[in-house]
Image (cartoon, rainbow, N blue to C red; front, side, top):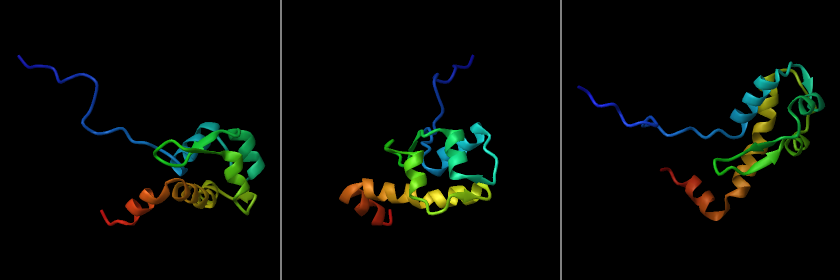
Length: 107
């Protein structure tokens, strides 16, 4: 007779998605078609909060779009590439000194 493995899980930790990964999933769920304008994307996705770091800090989609200089995107990759610097900047600004120091260390 064999014993059942302990219930509730695997040995791998749950993944935490933020930034572009979350936005990519929401685009697929909303079935956004490209080319599209920033306004069309905002209408399709709403002005929901997008987490930009693993700690759960968020930025409204509208606020992120306001920081992007272009307003028309030919495809999803172009859209996500345009928003990546916004999420990255917010992540770096929000961490403080210790986060900056940890990010600079090679381990």
